Image (tube, helix red, strand yellow):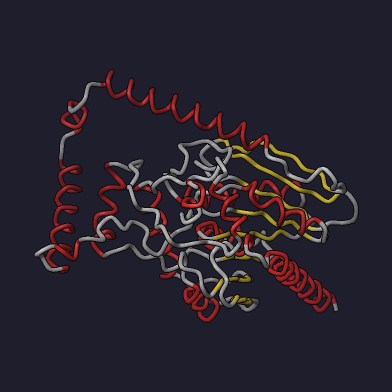
Length: 393
């Protein structure tokens, strides 16, 4: 019966990312006073760190103790990575009855030379129409997208997928993301690798939830956009807000001081991410899915990238398809509508699914949603071919 309770957890970028101050209404201080107080503490602490002499900082703990502590953490992280990598390697990528798909796993060294776990599903026969690179959501991993990959390969699309740092079989502490900009850089480096190996094949980036935010930011860089035919976003993490403004004020401090700390109760219960009970059970019984409390730096990074994207939403020019369930309580479907309305892209589409939840590719209608994505990519490829013919003539 414990597994049933786990179904209620969400691994997405919740609109209440760090709800640890949910009882703050009982305080005798006003919201404004509390916010000013925490901003003052934050400013004081940061100035204190900047002004404190380096020798004072180093004298707080002896070098031997500090290096020993780092060594213990590093060893623990490495052991955890090896355990997760073995699990990732052992996942079945296709069912025994299927053929016509070449599957493999490998390691890729990202922008910061961290080892990232990769998967690929390539159709054996026929010419590939295009390649789609999958960037998964927060706390999950690329192996969860095997069903979607099979659907794509059946339509002659090649599929590659990458586990973020701290996720799946990749390096790092499980569930810890020191910077989403690192994930953006790794995504760009991975795309460059795939494009160099397949120069004549059009490439698409796909991102789910926080992975959607990563893909959208990556595509904002001209050299990355130039390698892309388009991007697909499912339930992207846009306009993510903290539980209270005070959380946003103190998050940078805690992110700096205790970046790996886990906030108990930060994962909201009672927010299902799929209407399919079997999909929920499979997700939260998967040892490669991180179900612990969100880590401080990870939460701050989600707030930071979400804020950046909303500030720059009008400058989005890459062709895109955004898909969102109207009943999603993890990320905001209205933010996806705003992206569609305000983006400068000339080739853009939106699909809103009435009553659907957050994990669209794990809803009962996953086949239809996958087909909508395939149809959009084929429409985009046809538009590009028509444009090339018009230029030639």
